[in-house]
Length: 365
Image (cartoon, rainbow, N blue to C red; front, side):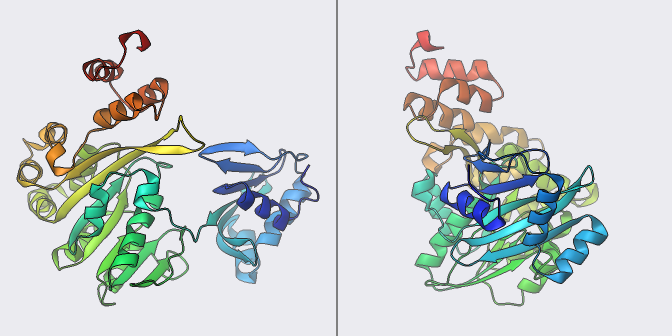
């Protein structure tokens, strides 16, 4: 047992165990998300009163308590000396108080430590253009973006502006000056902050998520005017990311949008997280698109966009790779299991064929 379930005790345990999130709700024990999976704490189930008390303990500011009472949910920040900084969301579930607290980390893993391809370093060295990190929820997009920002921060004298919802990694000034702005705390939304940010003399801009046309339009404008823009997008593949960005524009603007995207897009890193075989935790499976003449042509011409996957598969010289190619590398290298690889890829039979061609033992398929 962890002892009295004070909020400080639970948060200290979460940090000590390397958890990204702490879940609090009545009727069950607190939960920790570790390496992407939820694990119950050895603790008696929380009563309605317990959960309510823990949530109210976390809402230190009167305005946050008022928001929670009035709207039944609230985004908030929490700083506990000696433990760390957390972003939280409190909400009601079947009338009882609940919340999730996410640990805002100050240590940012490097590109190498994350196992990202070397071309990610080249993307961080760009002085202009748009680089998109894509993937589903929970695929490590935020961590990848943080590692790119950290590399810029350590190697270039420039002004980095980040717009995030919420801030999950704290970046201290190193060679660069870093301004981190948080949605709902420092600014209204991504589009407003991005428009304002253009007047704040940034060299590198991080957009936590491209959610709407206005944000995408402003991000493209920023990349066209000499800024490096790093952004995340919910998409299942590089081709899907391109199509999603184009589809945000009205039909009458898509031809012009294709031309702008073809000119500004420098690369896409699309990723999933898979359980590692050789150590605790997860590693990324990555698809990479890097801009070249064929890519620009395929983005510009709607009839050729379907060829992007083929271009990626043939683009090893430019640092490109498909999900299938990366899965083959990881399975043969013993980094991930075949069953986990099959859970990532859409066409399992194609993966099996690729593994056989690469010399993987047929008896293990």
